Image (tube, rainbow, N blue to C red; front, side, top):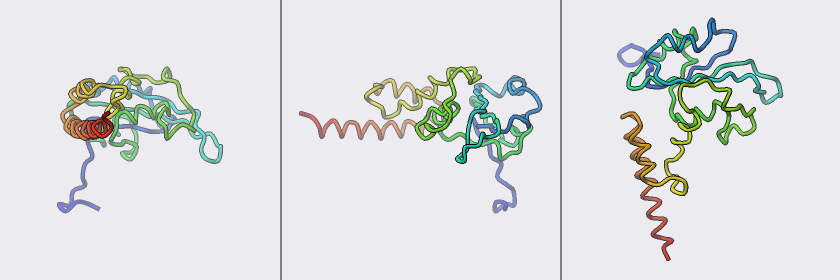
Length: 182
C-alpha cells in the first residue's frame, strides 16, 4: 500500500541494524563495512549460541550496528550492500539498548546466552557507548554536568530529544529532593 502520492516511503536514517543468517553473507562482514566510507561506526557479533523457547539451537546469525555520522542513508541501499532483503535492515531507536543486545546484557535478555564483549568486532568502545546512553536520569551515578555533556555529544536529531528527556528527569529529581529535604 502506498502513500497518498502513490509512492512508497523510503526508510532511511543515521544509524541502523542489519540482521541476517550466516549462510546468506557472500563475504566477510568487515570487508563489506570497509568498502563504504559512509559507515563511520560499526559493531557486529555472531549469535551462534542462542536457543529458542523449545530448547533448539537457533541458526547462527549476525547483528550489525551501523552509524553514518551526519549522513542519512536509505535502508534499502544498506540492504543491497549486505546482500539482504530490506526487512533485515531496521531503524535504531535506542543505540544503547541495541549495543547491549549484541551481548544480551540488557535486562530483558538475561535468560539468553550471554556473549562476551570480546566477541564483538567494532571500531569504538561498545560498552562505554551503551553506558553513556544509559546515564540519562541516573543522578546517583552521573552528575547533571556529565549527563549534559553526553547530550551535547549527540547528533542534532538525538540531541533535542535527549535534552528534553534530561530536562524532565532533572525536574523530577529536583522535585524529589525538595519533597525529601530535612
